[in-house]
Image (cartoon, rainbow, N blue to C red; front, side, top):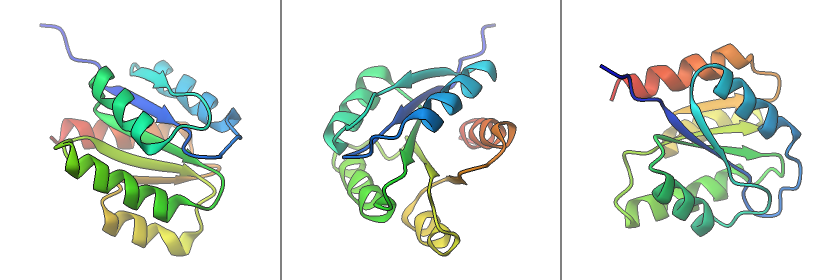
Length: 133
């Protein structure tokens, strides 16, 4: 019996033009056995949502370096609800102040990975959340 690979979309929302970290995380997740789709820079929430739908992803990973993580996540969750895609997990990485982590998890974010988070921790967290479904 073949085990289904976890499908992850790594997305760079809005005007965020820093993608080195996102690309490195994408490679680490591939090394951990996941299928990873990288959206490229400057993606709107609708573009991210459309890619997630077309690629049938289990997880949307937002890489955010601009400080706009709270409104971006709110907008994404509103659109996921509108499209009946609430089964897709959302994780966020990048420049995330510690004080915002509880706000993100309360909004529905399943994993928050500030800069410097160990790659194995990110992969293990994603595997655990998808397997628990």
